[in-house]
Length: 336
Image 1 (cartoon, rainbow, N blue to C red):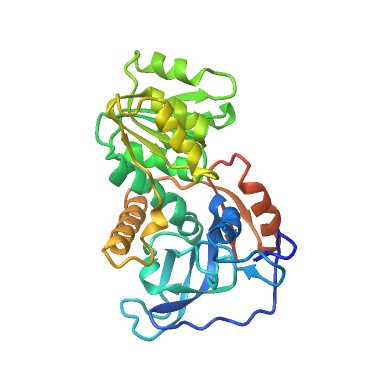
Image 2 (image 1 turned 180 degrees about the horizontal axis):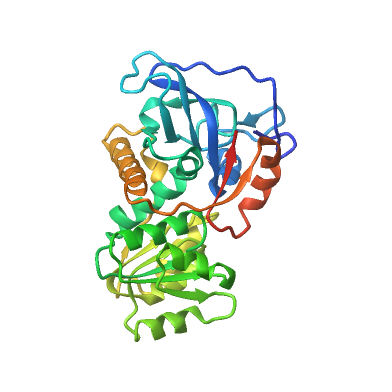
């Protein structure tokens, strides 16, 4: 959990097992994916006024999880004790039970059945990263056969799945931007071209690959400066998706006003998979439809799911301190 008094992530034992309320299920957690947003949420809660950020306050971290249903709350149907599920849960409540724990209470509506042939490690790595990537590829960018796609930050957790899903949807040219050490990895996922952002001019290389035509779809998973390059490389009437979680959204809006997106008639596709939680307008149902489609596609097509690091509860504080700023390959996960 995050302890606001010390401004640190800590491991706490001796907590009681939470009980499910109406519409909830209690899970015995088998694992949880570790996401950059997990490290950001405690400060976001203070920014949005949910928490005061004072000594004595704490937040149980972990937006994702995989586990076995131990108990169902009143009014829950379609899920029973013993079922294996994965989930992505609401993040901005002060009393949420995070997935980095042995037990967690989760809204039943946020759970997706784990396909029978899928192992726990694969299931654990899926929720936030894969479901966000699938939203990007199929709902926001509508990647289709023959497309040319630029994926900036292609080797990270979400970027890996964006690359994989672009290939699954038939994109013919997938340009992956990441460090040279990860080029072989992203080519195995489906990238047709790779660019080392450390040693190569990304804009010049993309123009070389596309003969100056640019790309129809660009997905940025890094930040404002890489987003600026994506906008410049997306051709007329194309789609540009700033899929990174911004520390300052204003930086992204400044790029849009500076780079002539209007004159190029670009579609700017913002993404936020968890935004459907708590909505009563059909958003939650659409969100979970995306989750089920993505999970079943990974299982049915045996798509690659890279787990780069497996950690224990004792490892988590240090990992969370590092993950927000470090460049990762694939997914880091907690297994219990």
